[in-house]
Amino acid sequence: MTEFSALEAANTFEELNLAPELLSAVLALGYTVPTPIQKEAIPLVLAGRDLMAQAQTGTGKTAAFALPLLHQIKPHANASTSPARHPVRALVLTPTRELAIQVHESVVAYAKNLPLRSTVVYGGVNMKEQEADLRAGVEVVVATPGRLLDHAGSKTTLLNRVQFLVIDEADRMLDMGFLPDLKRILDLLPAKRQTLLFSATFNDEITRLAKSFLKDPIKVEVARKNSATELVEQVAHKVAEDDKMDALLRIVQMREISQALVFTRTKLSADKLGRRLQRRGVEVAVIHGDKAQVDRILVLEGFKQGKIKLLVATDIAARGLDIVDLPCVFNFELPYSPEDYVHRIGRTGRAGMSGLAVSLVAPAEEKLLAGVERFIDKRLEISPLPTLPAPTHVAAPVKQAETAAVEQPDSAPVAYRRRAQEPVCALFLPPVPPAKPEAPATE
Ligand code: AMP
Image (cartoon, rainbow, N blue to C red):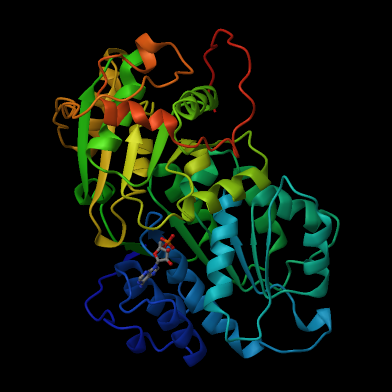
């Protein structure tokens, strides 16, 4: 494996020698300078090399692979209506539907000045529409592995002319058990192809995978594993489990946080927190593995449009969410895996902007916190919770949906309590079921 040194890396998109149609598309998107991964990866991909790239979501990795691929398949672009003239030439595999949709959106944006066809296929939705696109012929397919195999199995699409394969978020693919599917897909592809593997982390397993799938790959590393942790202000508060939601709302108010992603460990606690926040009048939505695809898309749109203030998510569901300008991430529950902590906080502080990651640590989670600190090689200072300003006037009592003692202490100042009068965004939450005991669950 060769290590790449970016001594001669380009500093502008013009210097990357991309086709003018691609250059004008990225400039129109407002990209002015290539990100580090783009500077390093684009020339190598254009030179035909296989790549093993360590880059997290938010580093601009999608353009790092999509632009040079599109550049290389541009000579095949044609306006023919014959499916035979549009074989699949580039295949991008992603672990989640959300990521597939977002990668495809980027491909469409980058390729908007070229007569190249692309589509996205993922599970959980009807196959018909996807079949029609595939049968008509497409040069670029972005797919989750299972659904792609379904289409390939029914011969809706042929993969024997694929020249470029991208495996995106390879670490997550393995975590989610996609290795057998990946192997089956690789068996359908020509041996002569260019393969690019992107992963946020590289452990022995990924390196083994890379060695078996890639040919003399060049390793590109844009940042150390814990670089996200350096860009983001990290705060930890010790809070009793029952007081976490109050603490969350208080911090949101005191730090004037416009929007935040709030992480829980399980689907069950995500739903529970979503319902509690909804009762408090917060514009909240919940996203996790059990949500229908259509709900996830609606939620993401709602969040992007600012209709949702707090998005409660599990680790798996949050992967691949392309949310730019996310000012804050809450670890409402610390993750079991310290790597997930890094993934979580990497959702804020993107593109050099400052970000804030707040961890609410219950006594039972102190061991998890210690694990995180070891992993990121940094101690997280425990800060006192921000105090609330004294009330300036007296308001009528606020109608409370939950037990006053836990949810809305009488001592809470007016400014805080008034939140309960704001409109409730029930759009994305199921009706509140009758109270029942919580069972432990995992995603
Ligand atoms: P990604 O890591 O591919 O998910 O990209 C993260 C975000 O950065 C996306 O919203 C991209 O549109 C944006 N982006 C990618 N490259 C650049 C660039 N060179 N300049 C500004 N924004 C970019």
